[in-house]
Length: 344
Image (cartoon, rainbow, N blue to C red; front, side, top):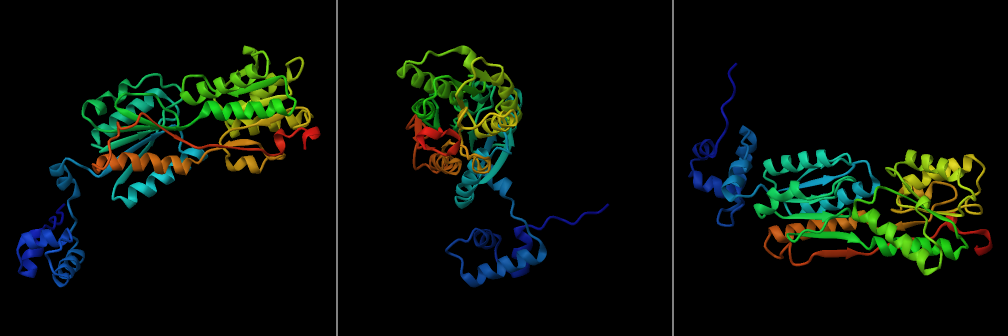
């Protein structure tokens, strides 16, 4: 089957009776080419179906003007907001974005990193999977001086920057609030303490207990995947505890809501019997009844800061290694789920 021949700048030059060099400069919007000539070039290019060969040009420039992004889950409210912020900055700076998800598995994250490397991305943004415990799969980037920035779920590396919030402080504030509401038996629902966010939130929880002379008990830490179903499973464990806890601090809102729903089904009054605080300020936190107290931190802002930091490095206006950590703000939002009746 015969296919149409690819249109080139030489075809445009021949039709307009100008040099190929003039066509090339016109297509790049060179200031030395008149507006009238540029219009003729673009009009004919559209008419005859000319496609600029960005790939070939970028290979010559050793740049693809593309950024890679690896996240755990695309359906996470936090990650969706972060992606939106990253995409906004990337598009405004003329960069394309390739997005992939690890589905919270190290092996898939490593495979995604290899794909990104082979796609010749100029830089990479990563929020690590639940079970990632080393950064060896990113070594090819570091060896080629391709910048990598980690955000939210991070690991320190001498050739990278980490962008996150102070998770230890946020968890401390959440647990301290429960203690101030009169809670003395506080359960912490979290994920495996492999990633910084869960390690630091556990540390913040422990610190608040210690400062208020409440003994930490391993049995009061329930570990799961922080899905809504995991929250429901945690509720089953909680209901078997004797005596029942009077407070729960959960490392995300989804699991907190699952836990709340199950406890309410069994007749537990929230917050009078058990006060609950979540983390992330997902939209569901304002839908569940009572509304969920939670830690708010802006995924969109983290995405914007991560993308700007990476692109500033790619554009030569800053060095990605200039700082190890960029710490952003978080805010504790108190709602009805954690306010004991005698404290309202």
